[in-house]
Amino acid sequence: MPSGMIPSGYALVAGLSNTGKSSLLNAFTENNISPVALQPASTRMPITAICTPGNAQICFVDTPPLENRYAWSIIDWVDVIVLVIDIRTFDRDLENPLVKHFLRCANRKPVVLALCKSDFVKSEHRAAFVTRARYTNQFTGIVPVTPMLGEGIAELMDAVLQNIPMRNRLFPRNINTLNSKRFLISEQIRTQLFSILPLEVAGETAVQVEETSQRDGKLYIRANLIVSRASSKGMLIGRKGQTLEQINKLSSKAIAEFTGEKCRLDLWVKVREAWTENKTDMLEFGYVC
Ligand SMILES: Nc1nc2c(ncn2[C@@H]2O[C@H](COP(=O)(O)OP(=O)(O)OP(=O)(O)O)[C@@H](O)[C@H]2O)c(=O)[nH]1
Ligand SMILES: [Mg+2]
Image (cartoon, rainbow, N blue to C red; front, side, top):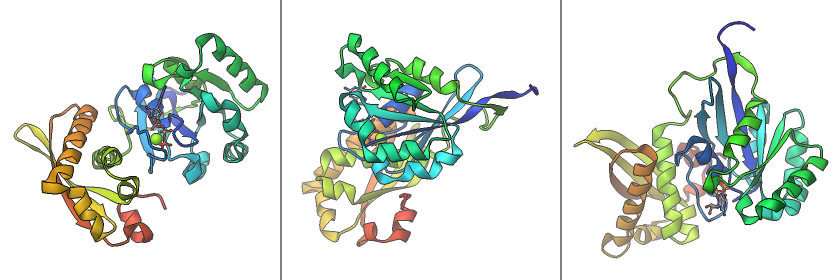
């Protein structure tokens, strides 16, 4: 083996919506790089996290749910796939036409099955799910995991690592993501909108970070919240600016947890009529079309 070769590669994290993909990414990295939310389809764009177990490098790619079809587009680029299913809906998920189609398309790649949210099943019953998944002959590894408690994460990492090829280092040392800081911050803000605003308004609000800099020892962030209808603007601002203040408070907390820095967030509400129907606007705001 030529010197300088290490296990280095990409692992695609895919699955139906709300199965725990982003929670898994965060458990691998032990930070909140990918926002987690109660509502389905919270991840809209891929988020990457580079883990370095031992001397290896694994770039995990958290993807929008299979329903969104994005995951298909990067199958050929990755070395291994982590298919995340919710252990509570084990049978339904494995029989889901989207999952079946995805597995057919992914058949040239090793697929590790993550039986997520395994805290919902008694520990003595988990082995039965592993056995049943093994019978399908579709997976190179099967691991029950509970990202919320960090359980099964090391085992899953090991199962992924076994499928990462030896090659020259793909990623420079000391980087932990391929996404920009601005993008990751905008995703932290966007996720908070869903806990405060009606679903349809939050879903049609884009977040664009215009500036990040250091001011008075704090991370200063100026961001625009861009609504798709003028009538939504008042809803975001709220009576005497209370709603915007609440968004600011929750977002600042989430950003501080993610970056480890105290932050000062300056939010502005803007209108771009019907941006959700305009492909150019969507691309500008970083959406996968
Ligand atoms: N009980 C339990 N809940 C979990 C666990 N992991 C994630 N959740 C919850 O499941 C919900 C969805 O988690 P996410 O990580 O956002 O799921 P996702 O697959 O990324 O969701 P989308 O991006 O919307 O497809 C959140 O409310 C999480 O708190 C777990 O191990 N146990
Ligand atoms: Mg997600």
